[in-house]
Image (cartoon, rainbow, N blue to C red):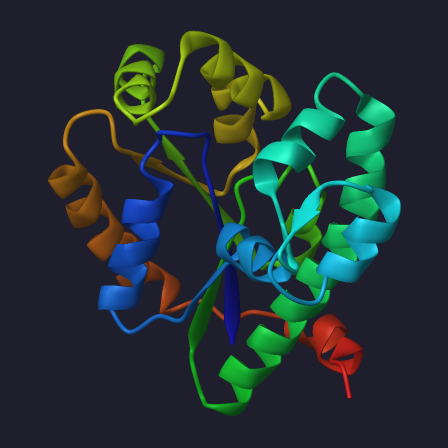
Length: 208
């Protein structure tokens, strides 16, 4: 099975690309969505202990947690040390399940793929990219988004030029998402011809 790492900065069109993979029958693991699940389940007692006052009604209050770690790199690192291993294990289990089901390709959708070293857990990487002014328009159009929040989010992410330089494939979403989907159709057909090897390393790490 070929494991694809899908990434892209905020507002680049990564979620649309992931949805298109799914439309082609390719299974996709959404790392961000899984973190949301953790904040309502497995990670709650761990975060409650490490970050007192950031949970409400048995779940993590994301606004309170964000306030706790804002401008405090050591606190953010402590949070990542709780959440990251849980996400990685879930990704590995997901991939093993998809391989067992006979999927030829599986996708890990990871916003901070290169920033967290997740490229070591995939065979190929795909970055979704758009010019800065288009990215800015898309993000600032979101409810509750401000320039300050946008820049803070971008500050945590690898620059687009660096991401493009490190990716095996780049999808341009700067014209229209429909054009990007057309390009992705061709990429998916190309990926189907490739053989992966990363599962040889990941398979033994599956949880019992």
